Image 1 (cartoon, helix red, strand yellow):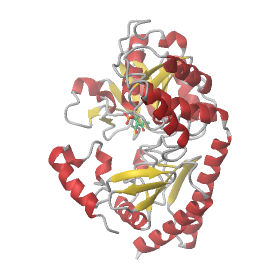
Image 2 (spheres, helix red, strand yellow; image 1 turned 45 degrees about the vertical axis):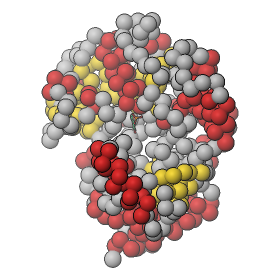
Image 3 (cartoon, protein in one colour; image 1 turned 180 degrees about the horizontal axis):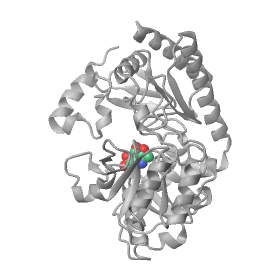
Image 4 (cartoon, protein in one colour; image 1 turned 30 degrees about the horizontal axis):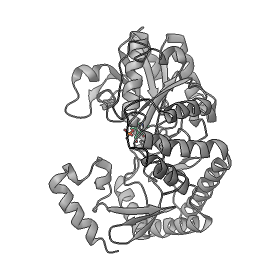
Length: 430
Ligand code: PLP
C-alpha cells in the first residue's frame, strides 16, 4: 500500500499543528504507523491522498449513519449555503430542529443547540448544578464526555476516590468536584452518594458506553441508577452523543425505556457538521438563560448550515424506520461473521455488541467496565488494526473505541470485512 502523500502531509502537519492532528486519536499513536490523510468519502468508502480506498467502520465517529456524502444531506447543505452561512439570529430551522428532537427523544421536552458534544456535556452539568444548588457530579471510569475540565478525571486506584486530574491544566479544585465510580458498579455509586449527602448535582453516564471500547450496562444497572437519582434529588444525565438516533430513533432511553432528566446529543444531529445539543424536562431547561439564571451562549449555535444538514438527517430517520432494522441486520451479520472466524481459529476473544456498534477485545475476559477493558492486549490490537487496514478496512485506531456502522454497507462489503477479519487474525497470531 503506497502512502507517500499521507506521510508527506503528516510531516508537514507536525510543523504547524500539535502532533500533526486536530484531535489526538487521529495520530494513530495507539496502533503505530502514520495516520492516513483523507481526501474524500462516498457511501461506505474512504479515499486517502494516495488514492487508496477503504471500507469505513468509523463513519466520522458516528454521524455518517447513512454513509458518506448522502445526497439528502448534501442537497440540504447546498440549498442552505445560498442563503448565507451564519446570521447569529433566530431562524425557522432551529425551531424545526428543536421540535423534531423533542418529538423523537422521549425524555426531552426542551432543547438548546450548541456546537459540539463537549459543549453539550459541559452545559448540562452547569445546568444540573444551577438547578440543584449542589456542586459535585459522579461520572464513570472509562466514560468520555468530551474534554471539559470536569470530565478529564481518572478514578485513581480505589473504587471510591476523589478525582485526580487526568491532564495538566485541570485544577485540583475542579477535580475534587468530580467523583468517579466503575461502570456497572452500583455499590460504588451508593457509597459516593452516602459520603456526599445532598451535594451531588448529577450522575452523568454513557448509557451504553463507547469510549472504553463498547461496554453495555448490566441488566438493572440503569434502572437502579434512575431510582437512586430520584430518591436523592440527583439529576440523571444520559450522554447520548454516540447512541442518540443510532441505537434507536430515541436513543438508549427509548431502547431500554429508562428516562433521564437531561440528555446530551451530538454527531448525528449535525449530519456530519459540528453540532451538539442538550435537553430535558421543561422545568429544568427553563433554568437556562435567558429563561433562567444559568448562563450558556454561542455565536454559531444553531448555525443554519448545520441545522439544515441535521434536519435532513433526522427527518429521514424519523420517517424511515427501516434504517434501524437495516443497522441491526448489518451489525448482526458482521458480528456473527467475526464470531464464526474466532471459533474457526480457536480464539476466545470478547466481542461486545449492540445494534450498529461493536468492539472486539483481545482478551477472553468478560468486559463490563474500564478495568476489564484494560485486560485486552493492546499491542495485538495494534497489529490487528494494521492488518485490517492493509486489507482495505478502516477501523477506529484504538482498542478503546467502538466501531460505528452505516446503512451504506452491503452484503458484499460485509463479506469482504469478515474475510479481512479472518485473514488478519490469522496473520497476527503467527
Ligand atoms: N460524549 C460522548 C459519549 C462522546 O463519545 C464524545 C465524543 O466522541 C463527546 C461527548 C464529545 O463530543 P465532541 O467530540 O463533539 O466534543
